[in-house]
Amino acid sequence: MQLISLLFVILAIIAIYNFAPFIITLINNESNELATRILRILIFSVFPVYIVSYYATLLLIPLGFEKIWTKISIYSVLLYLTLFLLLYIFKLVNVINLTFLNVIIEFYVLFTSFYQCKKLKILL
Image (cartoon, rainbow, N blue to C red; front, top):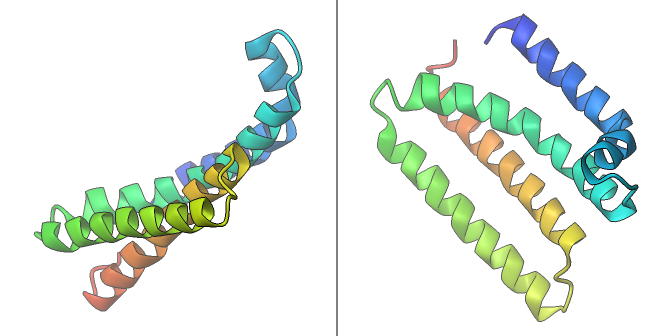
């Protein structure tokens, strides 16, 4: 992973988080507190998505570990559905909780991908 691209991702996260109200106003022509909150939560999923693309696209899949990547993907869907069902059972389904759920799943995929790469000793 190149340090420059990682630094760019981190700076983009910080910038988008800080300028979220302006970005939402620019897109929507008016301020929207809910959209600003959602953007500020979702921006944290950029980091795990960036790192996972490295682990999956550049390590697991090209080195022949497609089955492991498929299992990670299936388990992430099962975890998502389980957590969604819990939210539904406890009547907590709303856009903010679903946004947090998305970020949680992305971090789950990040940690399991990292764990598998470390277990297989293929980290660069």
